[in-house]
Amino acid sequence: MAKKSFRCRLVTPSASLLDDQATYASVPAWDGLLGFLPGRAPILSKLGCGELIVRFPDSEKGAGGQRSYVVDGGVVQMQGETLTIIAEYAAAAEQINPAEADAELKAALARSPEGEGTARVVAQDRLTRERERARVKVRIARGVEAGV
Image 1 (cartoon, rainbow, N blue to C red):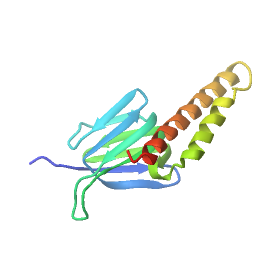
Image 2: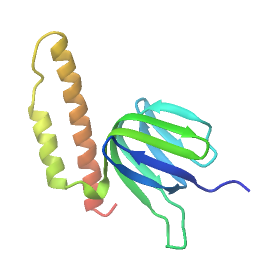
Image 3: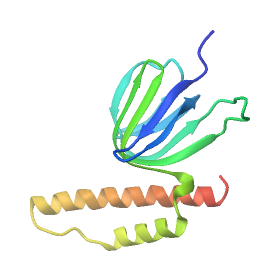
């Protein structure tokens, strides 16, 4: 009989946000979404910026459900029956304040890259990443607010 779940871990440099059994995970890789089910082949990939969705199995505690997280940067690895996501930044959807997310996006959109030459290119890349993270936060916060 096939295994119906796998261990899913989400860690950042400062915290462990998740360490639980999961039935499915949708992970934003740097080049698109990766889906994970039990028995998936091993993989190592660069983590992108976006929404991580994790579905949990039913248990004696009740229905499994799903949770969302904002993740940005890092790596994701599936080895055996363990999915490990090491993110530079991660936050649970329910911890995102919609008003703060909106303000963060407005501030990021209002800023311009500084410097010249290579320094300006680096600043533009950093600003683009900040804007993308803020957009993901706003989208997820609005979904949580609406009960999605």
